[in-house]
Image (tube, rainbow, N blue to C red; front, side, top):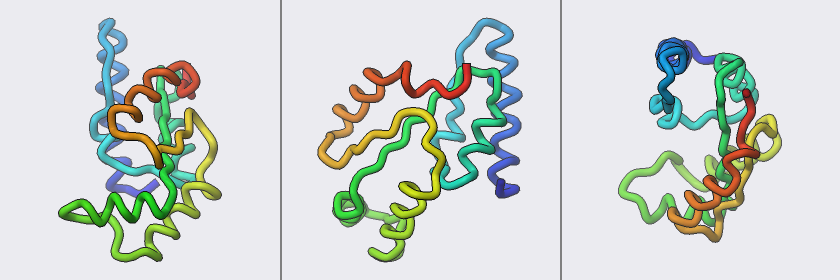
Length: 126
């Protein structure tokens, strides 16, 4: 795991564990700000072992991702090749944990609804 990410993640695990011990629920907001693909997903899941962790993977088609990126004021991809490389890593290099959703044809609201519908199947760590 990349050192800067681990520096963000390990304190989150400690905070979440403490909150759960006190009977509170938590969301790792720092984790939600990062895209985790490839083998690193296993490392993140291992950090949360024993905690109720849910993983949702949104996988719009490369064409839809490119169109969404073009509509934004800033982009996470330099060009179409970057989008294709990301898509290949996501689809073939990322362990299939949690719930994977093709969000190509879904609005933000529909994507949120699907996440709620599949809340149970997204659980990767009890």
